[in-house]
Amino acid sequence: MASKTILTTMATSSSTNITITPRIYRYLIARHGETNFNREHRVQGTLDESILTSDGKSQAAALGDYIASRQRRASDANSSSPPVTRTWCSPLQRCRQTYAAVVESCSSSAADDAHPLPDPTVHFDLREIELCEWQRRLRKEVAMEDATNWNVFK
Image (cartoon, rainbow, N blue to C red; front, side, top):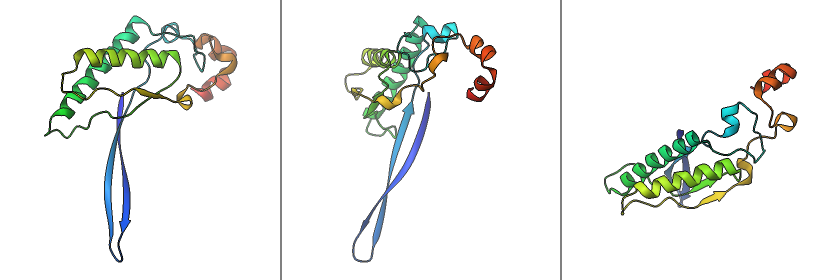
């Protein structure tokens, strides 16, 4: 999981004065949990066949616990930690399973006054890249049979 802060500015103008008000956005970006394809070292790409393993579900639950603690801190008036207010998710099954496990863990460990995690916006462009004939195949097979392109890809 990575976090990133982005600073944007908004300008307003009166006859001679310009006021710039900074707005800070904090993004928490998480990849899906481990899948059966990850475990088997298979290329997934845009295939929607892989599912979370028990480890992948545990990883998502741990992320949910972390987010729940952030949401609790955000409920504190003295906190500098903003709540999660918008979420996005890939339409791929492995990502939707991850999000569902995060929400379940977040809900079960949240305090009554914590900010609830919002429903995700499912965004088609958040899918993995298309890997054509490599998909479903073992990575080592692809690396042996198409070494030049594999080395460029990885």
